[in-house]
Image 1 (cartoon, rainbow, N blue to C red):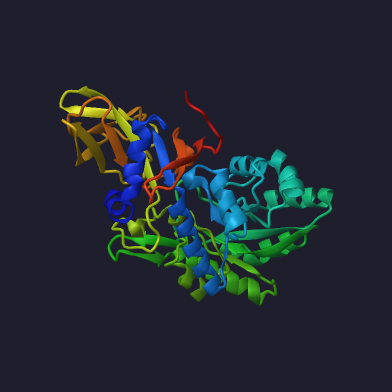
Image 2 (cartoon, rainbow, N blue to C red):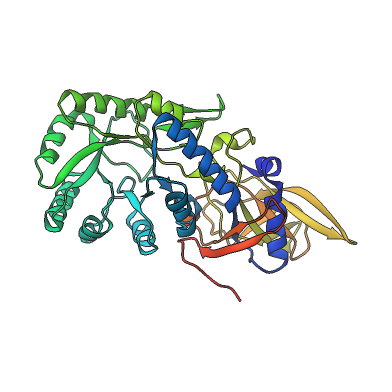
Length: 392
């Protein structure tokens, strides 16, 4: 999906990744992240957000809940904290000493973990979409002797909700829900959110507002008319330097960039966006079977739109790059290997660039600096959950 954009925007990442694999610094099934380009992307997004008065919660799940990158965002670049899409991400980043600002949107915190989140992690906001969870958070806040701000999520039946992410209060119940939650001790309704509020439209080749955003704006209007002081209107999905002006246009206060940090948002598949591709998947050929070659897998993401790979072949002292098609004949299969439509020697290096969610893979994550100056330096090697690893 992003291979041609990678070739156009960041060829040094390709060369550096091949070098690291050749020298044994990394193993196959590794995502290599260009930390310098990641930082440039993050700075661009932050500058745009500052221009429009938008606060940013960085999202880390796409690049493996990585604590080093999270600390760059918060400690060095001034992001307002990290959004954790589930409780395990919150646990991981809290243990790494990262500031966590938003928990609970896609996955509510489990009952027995709520007291720790409220008393110890103390996020700026927790998204709530059930009265039962609101009562648990309230009880924990009373016990911790602090007030916990929450965001509420309302929906209409016509909204677009991803499978297995269906959640929220019906917008028709907004008055009753707000009254009930506002009456709970040590709980403060800080704002509203929804997801996804922006999606890439391949027909228009633009990132556009969704009907979910219309619901969010309607809920905001109703809450305001009822007298609730909404201070945070969090408008996530596809946050980038290009969508931040729209967030401001619709009255949003917060965005949550994720894929834009690595330049892998759908709008950049042609390499046209200001954020440049900063992440590539590196593997090598394991064996041949029939007319195909099989490279080591582990990082495949079914929604990744993976179609092609770049291989680098060596013959009589000459390096030659080839684009090859990638096949996956059964979406239900485990990605032990990925199939290449070209016979290749065992050990041939392979580069791919596709939309991913590293935290659901079993890949390594290599953070590398100095790629643009042809001096690749490994800053750290991590697993897909953000734990530092060693090989060899």
